[in-house]
Length: 440
Ligand SMILES: Cc1ncc(COP(=O)(O)O)c(C=O)c1O
Image (cartoon, rainbow, N blue to C red; front, side, top):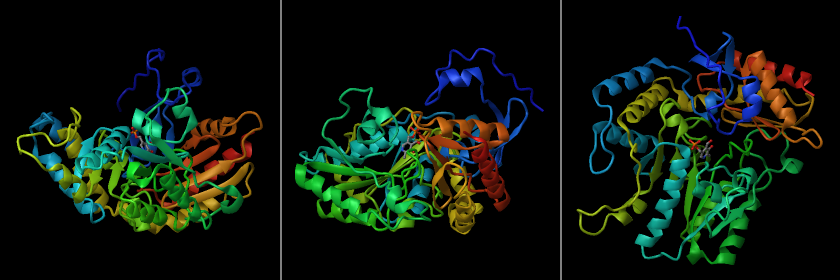
């Protein structure tokens, strides 16, 4: 057994998206993990109801992935990403293209979801420009969208706290309305019935600005970080039809929905809609090594492949794009998903998951339960005058009782590793039930 040393000075690390002062008063430290569980610094087991941060889809410390990383680190630690290559990045790109919906044929590697978003937006703008349509400079996002934390992502994103501190952001951005409507859709199972017409707002925006100015529309097929907002039936198809009609690129941000979360390899498969660009990260390497991948159509890629062949076609990339160790982790992760049928496990377990979650209807504070694939949300009535407090208390109580859940606003979001078993689902839901009965 490894002795775990826990630091007693927590002040230097300014933690991301964390209530730093609260955390440092009563830290929640994980020191080990295996499969469905974390081990805390005080030796308790915590059931992972969130796949880490929506990323550990194959469960924790999976041997094949660990060994691939160890082998790669000893064999080829780093190769320059620009003007040089190494075989594993090409192998991973090929595997991704095989896995992705037909029509997404080329891959750009990044190191995170945020970088994947920036990459996708830049590809979209540059694509129109190389085609001679440089007037298409506008980007359309959606209210309550989360596309990471970099400037492009927060500009097209629609979460006020993530945007309000940072000046004018990118100009030329507009937003679709979000689709969350408890008045018509509370306690929906799967896709809600009402709200497809909200996609028609895109026509209004297009008319306002003129299609010749619009480069791309970016949406999460299912909005994750803002509290699991599931698209109404028919909504995404309408977005696809309208974008196609006007020559606008459709970008799916599948950072959360990719790699099996909905019971299909990608949300694009679930909804039967192929975007022009697909943004991924997180589950690509099971969260183990930072890596993202942006998949684009041949039409987009080929538009750049002109001019003398000694010239760089696209001035973009990162020192760590397709890093050997990340590539090895990605290959081992995709193999693990395939060998264990994890990319479709959400379809097999989806009904069980749905029934378990909806059994929380009627518990204290619960104003909605919603689910799709192996994702779910329980929305709580906020405490008057103290939004987010109730859900945060539930999060802390759940952790203390042995369950890792995630809260955003007053919504509990759940997304267990795809290796989850029925007994874990029962345990998690019963644990949450107890917490809801205790929390003020
Ligand atoms: C849909 C979506 N896009 C982008 C991101 C940003 O990813 P990262 O935190 O790896 O930069 C996230 C992270 O949760 C996400 O959910």
